Structure formats: C-alpha cells, structure tokens
Length: 564
Image: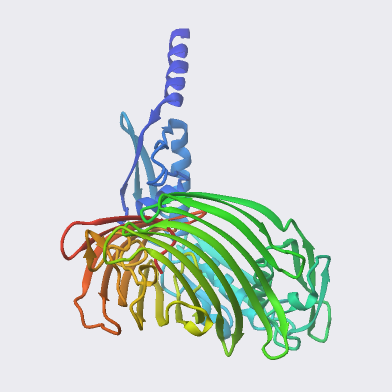
C-alpha cells in the first residue's frame, strides 16, 4: 500500500511540474479575426507573447497547473458571448496544450422592457444572441447620453435575467433622468503663479449652458496639457434644486522645471540622442524656456526657445510669441550646411484658424560636394506666414480627422537678404477609421519662385515622403547626389489593419513629382508601393515600412509616429 501511495505522490509532483512550450485552440475557433480568434483567446487566458521588436524576450512557458485556469477563463468567456451550453476541454501532448471549444446553440434575447426613448441605444435585439458586452455597452451609451445632455443625476436600473433552463434572456431597464442641469459659475482655487484669466481660457463650457460632461472633460484635458499642475480637481455641485451646477476647480502647481533626454534610431538620421532643459512656467503665466542639443549620425543641432503664450497687444489683442535661436551642422550627402537661425513667430487664433507670422534670419555656410551646388556663405532674411487647421483626434496616432496648412515665405533685399524669392507649401491630410481599418490620405504641393541655394530646395523621398526611395533621394542627381527641385507634388495613401489594439499591418501607395523649374508640375510621376508594421508603444507608434519604387529595388524605413 505504501508503494502505491508513493507512486501516486510522485505522479502528482510530476504532473504539477510538467511544462509546455505551446498552446493550441481547436474546434469552434475563428481564423485571422473574430470573437474566437487566437489573439482574443490568448487575452482571455492572460497569455502574452512579447512584441516583435523585443527579440530578447522569450515566449511564455506553461505549467500543467495553469490548464484548469485556461479552461475556466474560456468557459466564462463563451458564456459572456451567449454560449451557455458550450463545452471547453483541454488535452496535452508532450510539448503542447490543446484546448477544444464547442460553442453549441447560443442563448437569445426573449424580452426587452425599456423606455422607447432609449431603445435606439440598445445593442441587443429581440430574438438575437445575447452578449454581456452588448448589455454593458448599452448601459454605458445611455449613461453617456444623459451626462452629455444635461442629466448627470440620473438613476439607471438594469438587469439581464438569464434563464438557462428555458434558455432565454429577459432584459429590464428603468431610467429616471432626474433634474435637468446647467453650468453655473466656476470657482477657481489656484495656488500657482498663473493668472486665473489664463486658466479660464482653457474652459470650453459657458455659464448658463446645458450641462455636458464632455465639455467638462475637455476643459480638464486642456488644463492638464499646460503641463504645470501637480493636482487638478474639477467637481460639479449637484445639490442645488434649481438645476444650476457650480463647478469647483482646484489647482496645485507641480514641478515646472525638468531635464529630459532622448535616444532613438531611424533610417533618416541613424542613431540620435539629445538632452534638454525645460521650464514650463518661466517667470510665471505659462511662459516656456527650452535649451538643449540633439546629436545624430548626420550632425547636430542646438536650439534655444522662449515661448510666451499670452501677450496682450492693443491691435491684435491676445497673441502668443515664440523666439527660436539655433545653430546646427548637418550633412545632407550632397552638401554640408552650418546654419545659424533666429526666428520670431507671432501666433493668433482667428475665425477658427491658427495663424502664424513672423521674421526669420538664416546665415548658412555651405560646403558643397558637387559642382551644381556652389560653396559659400548666404544671409537670408525673410517674412513668413502659416495658417493651420488641425482637426485630428491625435497628433501622434490619428485615426480620424483632417489637417490642412499653407506656408508662405518671402525673402527680400529690402530687409537685408542676399536673395529674393517666394516659397509656397500647401498640405492636406484626411484620416478615417472603419474599425478595424484606418484609411489615410495626404498630399503636399510646393513651389519656389526663383533659383535658390540647395538648402532652400524641396527634397522628396524617405520615411515621411515617398517611401520607395531613401531620404531626400528622389529625382535628378548630380555626381550621384540628389539636387532637389523648385516644384513638387507628393501624395500618399495608406491603409492600416489593426490585428490587435496596439499592432497594425500597413499597405501604402506613394506618388511624387519634382522639377527643377518654377511652377512646373508636368513631369513624370515617381510611384512606389509597400507594406509596413505599426506597434503602439509608450513613446508613440514604432514604424517599419518597406517601399518598392517603380524602377526596382526597395527602401527600408524605421521611425516613430505615423506618417499622417
């Protein structure tokens, strides 16, 4: 008897200690995408494989004692998706866990009892499969509607009665909207060195307007983006019986000074790193001071920036002013440029547009490696104007919205410039999501009125332009080096398919024109196509693109941020 007991104990320890290197799902499993695709099932089991770029991390190894948890999690998931008669079983081979899923007949919604006013929000339908997510999301949609339309003190009672014996679901929802409420006065308790007027400009709701939680959230985000507050509390008072709701805003200034460093790589500049000192509240009222240096394979740049977002003037009213002083040395293959710049920009929002205008001084020392570009020193003084409309939902990873801009630069000998020209550049982008797809389009067109030094030419090709070509390598070459052009058109179309929330596969088509003549857009098109990957990391989308030009070959581009 003791021998059998010992064998049983040893067998138990062996089973508990057994490990497996892979997991497989069989039965009612979807292919690439679906409610029961491999990616979803791995998430349900809390199994995470390292992303592609983390090549140093190993794939997970599974222990035998984890198998029951995998089965329980998937069983609970099948129930939440409406398959209450499902069967989930697990078997093992020498090196793998095999989980077989049999969904069987889904449970359906038999009765819906809710107000007609809110039925359009319902994601569930009578006679259709019941999913817990549909029930939960319906409640969230109703709550959001109430909070955005003046009813933040609602009462919502919702139940989904699941009868496994009769195999039916009855849904009951009772909604009391409560008192209709309006924004009242905002009380700002501000301990920072920032005037309350500047804070109030970030608040998008108005006193007397219908209460809308979205406007409250937007105001909070606007204040948070100022980057100077350690604590922000924005609370509405719903205790007034007359429907008026005052807002209490409490602000505490945090650390406004910081040292920042960066390290990265892309195919445009190679390895690069930088350091920067930033004061987000330089002498108060949100003035900003930045000074730092960035070093890359191609060279380095040293910028100093002072920005005042609120300057009161007698004619223009409130404007923002930025002064940028910088020195850089950059190797563009066909020439090396040592550039000193002084740029003063005045900005103002007017009739829904962001306007920027100012003065720019550039002193360049050019050392050319090809005869077509003359070495020498250049002093260019110019006036510029830029107008922008940016309605994208994110500047780093936009999925919806549009962006347009127009830039005009005029250098004149009357203000001490050695050159006299007009430079125009227009750009438009449009991004639209049809989950799990995102489609994006952009076009850029530019022209220069006179022949200019090489550093004022347009250049195409690279990670943010025509991706079938290396950085600035598209168009006519001299002695093997690109010389850019005076007139350009550059267009791109891209589709992104989200395999997971943070991973997408990309296909793109790019087409460009570049000419050595002024206002000449009649030349041939340089087209390319390609594929890529995007991984949404904490520092933004990591981007890999491979482009194939019409002449053959390919170009590889690595970078951070979307092309659009």
